[in-house]
Length: 192
Length: 273
View 1 (cartoon, one colour):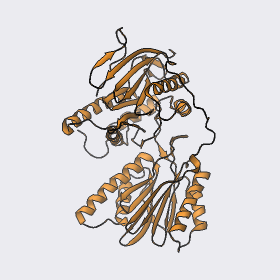
View 2 (cartoon, helix red, strand yellow):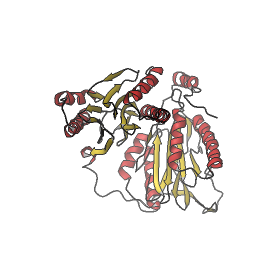
View 3 (cartoon, rainbow over the protein chains, first blue to last red):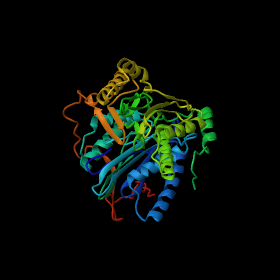
View 4 (cartoon, rainbow over the protein chains, first blue to last red):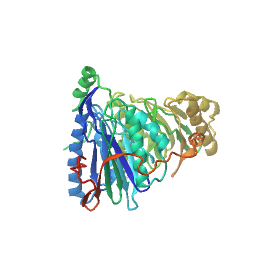
């Protein structure tokens, strides 16, 4: 979700195989650089594969370009990687959140599993509980939220949606990215 | 390192996942769509709605469906969103290189041939239905391209799930001696008809008017569908501290880490890629 010169990404930390919970601490949100956060949901093996793949690509980018990648460019990179597997795709839904440019304008991008991007100004959702998430974000979202309020809204949205989804839960993490840095908070969720 | 083109490495695995393990595949974003093109005396008008759906959910209420192929050749796309974006992007690239190497400004017919050959190679698996319109030195042209690679050249075209609704308006209102304002108004009405009557189309109306060496893009020319009347006046307010936190960790930009909580942190180190 985007606020005023800040963005937040929140996700749960359950890893399960259909109805069985396998792990409670699976982290699916990664930091690309000081300005970009990248989250993925879907098939865990593809999440791990793409994590390594993007790590490799970003290291190469940093070496070749001698600068950090901007969130928008990274989003296009993700879309291209996903579309190259158009017939035999990675089963993931990625979300990119970052601060773009000198004035730290919030940037949000979500793509589908084959890389069709959308750039909303307010919020993006993904995962098994995405329909509930969409409803609750649509209700609670306000424009130009400060980082504190953004954290509260994002947390409440995630908690509400996760409670309504059997496959999500067992812990959650919220990252709030501002120009000064990233604040990470863990929340208590229902353990069922 | 990845080479260009499509990569089929995961195809076998995906087939097994879906058939043997009943994996629920994430949905692709489709542009249900109403797209329309009309030729008038001086040029071409293209129109599109702005809704992108993911199953029954609206994924993007305001997406751009009219893509640039070259300065005066534009293309509206319906079907799978990733396919229309990437197909028009690829052909735009090829056309630019071609026009640089031949030293001539590109023709609409060239874009048409490139698109139809590309789509035919994939036998409809790339689900992109396109309305290609533009003005080159031979005059205004308008073509429709189906996902399997067949094309038609017509004075007025509608495609997408709302094509029937739009075609009804076009058939009633089209005449071969239309001027620019009439054509714009006709396309606008056709798209509106699609938005109102077709569930896969919605949002705002985008228009693109192409004439000889001139192009005007009217993004969101009609936003009456986007004005929500029933939004609750006072938004919900969450006071600071209303969410209970287990643990907090602040990482400042200058690579200095300040751990607020004295206990051993259970927050997994935010993995830096």
